[in-house]
Length: 186
Image (cartoon, rainbow, N blue to C red; front, top):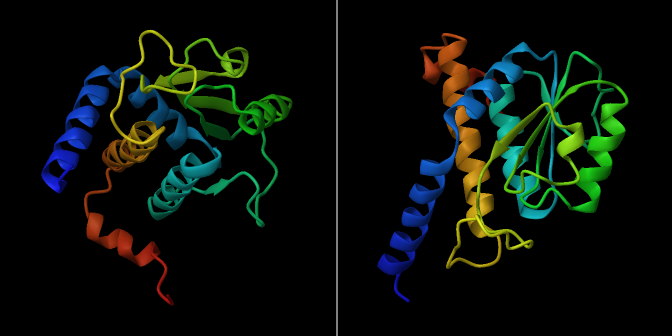
């Protein structure tokens, strides 16, 4: 495979995925984030890295955000939102975190592919990215990429799209000014 073929594969698959994402769900997620006192993000493996990138972007937008397990993680409350990304919705750590968090009544958003997962009873909002997961569900979008790369890419791009929605809703028009909140001693 050459670069051009790899590029076309990735971009075509992403286009198919985002044609299937419900914009109402994404808009609801953006609103829930804006209304939250704090936002917590969670995932495992590469998905966690995508969520950490989202956490950083939320902080740039003036939203108090952290990832679950971070050394400075504060207590979660009923004024907060927990966003958990898990394609299958069955990964042990995210499921356990959702169950534990629900005791404190935050809003819980699950970004995933499986609408009937172990997380479903705990979710306040499900944002579906219908990519192929380890469960190989019938209506998931197949991928020619390695393992769950398509889901991971989709999580990151969905996060960036949501960040744009948040900036618009918060009427942040000078996006260049956000650099003032970027790390400056790196």
